[in-house]
Length: 123
Image 1: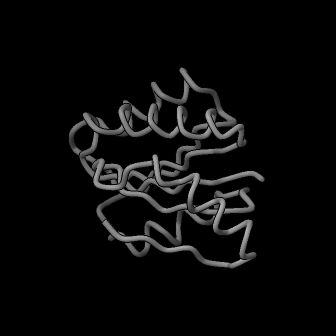
Image 2: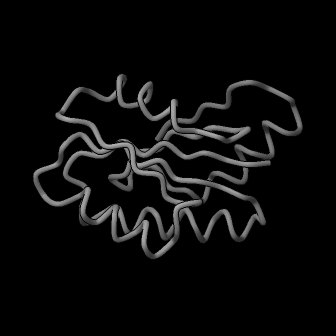
Image 3: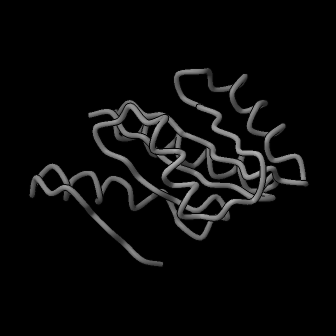
């Protein structure tokens, strides 16, 4: 299974590297292939620059940049990011660390075991 993670960002320069490292650790521990789509809404704190650094570290197959021209909202960030996904399973997480990737294996297991289209969780 190939997983796509949508990470909408706005001023998440500090949190983004932590979240991406947590995602890499989670997916590598699961033995799953994945990509992280960073949808940045023209952050003023250098988030896009940090995302570009992460692209260099983790590679183009793992980090996909999908920047936008301004702060256009969370819902439209999901739609925009979904155009870049290649995954069989799409996860949407907040880059502010309020969603812990450690739950991802349970989500993927539930999707596989029950063959459901949507698995949803809350904080």
